Length: 576
Image (cartoon, rainbow, N blue to C red; front, side, top):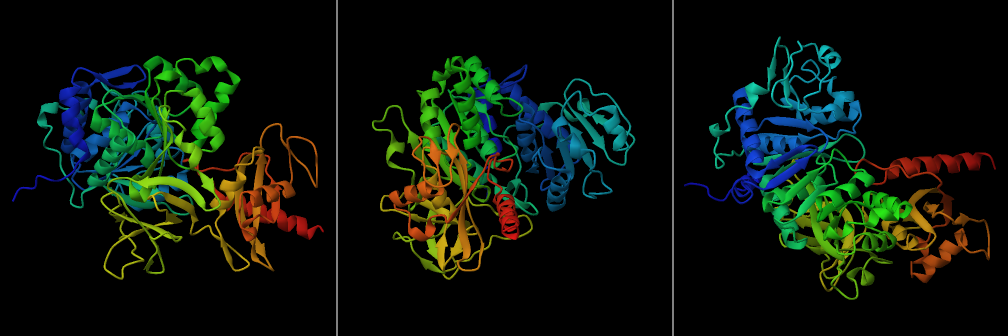
C-alpha cells in the first residue's frame, strides 16, 4: 500500500515554487532570489549530492553563518534523505571534534567562520569523513587547502568548492550544480529512521546528538503559524543562528508559509535596526540578550527608533524577558505583539506559548502574569503538545508541583545512538522528562519552578534558583541575579545570590537612607514582601561587577559562576 502521509520539511518547496515563483523570498547580502530561483538551487544541489554519492541516512555536518546558502544546503541534504548535523561556528576545536565524533559525518560543509577548527578535520582523524565542502567563493585560502593536503583549484560560477579527501582533485561547482530537472519537487526521500536533523545539545560536557524527525519540525512550524500568526506577507529577519533549534524551527515555519527571509551573517543590534527600516521587517526572533542589546543601543541614539512600526510579531525564547525589557520593547516596537515560548532542543523548540503584550489588548496580558513566589508562567501548551506533571511515578496534574513531562509528535526520536529515557513507564506510556520542575494551574497555564538538576537542598528543604531569581529580579535596582547553593556545614547547602546592580545603583553594607542603594537587608525584606518563603531567601549576597558568563545560546553558565563563588568564599574563610 502506498504511503501518502509522511511528513518532510521539503514539502515547503511546492508552495514556494508556485505561489512565490516570481516573488523575492530570500535576501542575503547582494543576493536576492525569487521562489523559483531558490527552489532551483535546492534541486540543483540535491542532484549534485546524489551524483557525488551521498546516500539516504548519511550525516552531513554543517557549520556556517546565517545565509540563503545555509537554507539551501539544509533542504538539499534532507531532500536526498541525508541527515543534517548543525555545528555551532563558535565552538572550540575540542567541542567541534567531540560533536563530529558523536555523529560521524561523511561530509563537512563550512564557511570562513569555522576556519579555526575545520582545517583540523580529515579522514585520518574522522574515518567517516569523505568530503569537505566550502560554500564561499573566496574561501578556503591556499594556505588552508595546503593544510589539509589537497591540490588547490579555483571554483567557477558558484560560491562552492568541494575537497575530496585522499584525492588529487577538487570537485568544482559545475560538477555539483547539475541540471535541476534531474529531480521533481515530489521526489524528496526519507532516510530509514525518518531523521531530518541531528542537533547537538548540552551546556556542559560532551554534546549529545538529538535526533529530530521531519514530522516534529513540520508540527513545530504549524504550531508557530497557529500561535504566533506568521503568514506569507511576513518579512522575517533571521536574528537567531540557524545552528540553533530556535533559529531553524522559526526559519522553517517561514519557509512553510512562504514568507520573505532577510539573512545577515549574525546578530548585531545596529544592523538589525537598519535592516528593519530598509526591508520593512515584520517579525523576528529574540532572546533576552538580543533584546537587551537593542534596548541599550536605542537608549544611546533615539533616532534609531524611527521606522520600527513595521514590526508586528516578536517571539522570545531562551529565557524569559524581564518586565523592564518588555516595557522597553513595547516602546521601541509599538505595533508588535510580543510572544514568549518555552521549550528545548529535545522537544524541537517550543512547547508552550504566551502573549506578553498585545497592542490591541487592554490591559496588556503581561501585567497579570510573570514571576511570583510560585514560579514563572510560560503559557499554555501548543495544540500538538501533551504536558503532564509527574513525581515518583504518580500523576500530580491536579495542581501539585512535580516534573514537567511531555509526549507527542514534537518529541525527539532519541539521543543519537540511544533511546529516550522513560522514567514514568508504569503504564507503558512513554513521556519525556524535560528536567524541569513546574505545575499546571486551573486555567491550563504552565508554571516553571526550576531545573531539577539545579535544585538547592537547604536545611532539608528544596529551593529552586529560578524561583528566587524571578523575585529578586523584580527589584528596581537589580539588573541581573543568579542564585545557587554552596556547601554549608549546618544547612548542607546555603542559598547565595550574586547580584549585579543597575547603573546608578550602588551596593552598601548595612542600612542607608540614600536613594538608589541596595543592601543584603533590603533584598531580604523585598523577598518577604513578595511572599517568598523564609528558607528560600538568600542568606548571603555577592556583588557581581562583570558580565555573567553565557553559553552561545545566551544561557547562564551556572557551573562556572558557582565555581568562582565557592572559590572566592573559601579564600575569604582562609584569611579570617
